[in-house]
Amino acid sequence: MPYQAFMLWFLLALNTALFTACGDALSKHYLRHLGTPSMVMARILGPSVIFLPVLLFWPWPELSQSFWKTIAILYPLETIAILCYMEAIRISPLSLTVPYLAFTPAFIILTGYVILGEKLSTAGTFGIFLIVCGSYFLNLSLARYGFWHPLKAIFKERGSVLMLLVAFIYAFTSVLLKVAIKHSERFFFAIFYYGFLGIFVALALTLFCRQTPWTVFKNAPKGASLVSISQAVAAVCHVWAISLAPAAYMIAVKRLSVLFGVVIGGIFFGEKAFGERLFGAILMLAGVFLIALSG
Image (cartoon, rainbow, N blue to C red; front, top):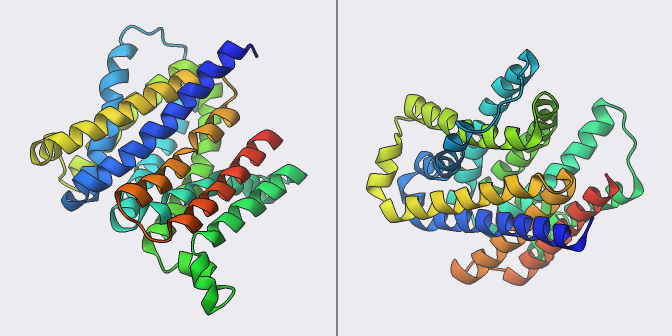
C-alpha cells in the first residue's frame, strides 16, 4: 500500500477513534442527567442526517433476501448494544467501561474456536492474554486485598459488566456485518447501515421509551448537538477509512478510542487510579493490535 494511502486511512481511523471518545465524554457530561434513552437518541441521529441524503443519489446494488434477513437481526442487536453502552458510561467511570470494548476481538476468536473449530494462532492467543491482563490492571490497586480482587471488581462495577455485554454483542454483529457486506457492496453498506440504524433506534426509543428526537434536543440543545456532530464525523471517517483499508486493521486503530476514553476520564472527569487504568488500557490495545495482525 502506498505511503500516502496508508496515512490517509490511518488518519481517518484515528479521527474515528478520537471523535467516538469525544462523543462518549460529551454524552456523559451533558446528557447523563436526562437518562440513557436521551443519550442514545443524540448519539444515533447524527450519522443518519449525514448518510440518508447520500443514499438518494448513491447507486444501490441488488439486495438479496439474505441481506434483509441479516439486517433484521443486526438492528435489534445494535439497539440493545447502544442502550447498554450508554447506560454503562452514564453510571460508571469512562476508564472502567470503554476499555472493555477491547474484548470484542477476543470474543470473536474464542467463538470461532468453540463454534467453528478454527485454530488459535500464537499471536491471537497472546493478544487475548494481553487483553485479560489489561483488564486486571484496570483495578490493580485492589490486588492488595488478594490476587483475584481486581478481576472480581469487574463484576461489582455495573458499567463494566454492561460494556462486557456490549463487547460480546459486537462479537456477533461483526460476523453478521461481514455476511451483509457479502450480499451488497462495502461502501454502500456502510452508508446504508449507519443511515437507517439511526431511524430504527429512534423509532424503537419512541415506541418503547417514549423518547422522541425533539425531546432531547429541546432539553439539552447544546449537548445533544455536540454529541450528534461528533458521532456524525466519526461515522464519516469510519466509512471513508474502511473503504480504503482492511477492516481488521481499521477497527484495530478505531479501538484507540479506548485509550482516548481513559485519558479523557482522568483529565476532564477526575477519575481515580489514572495511571493503572491507562496502563491497563494500553495492554488491552496491544492485544487488539496483535489479534488484528494475526488475522
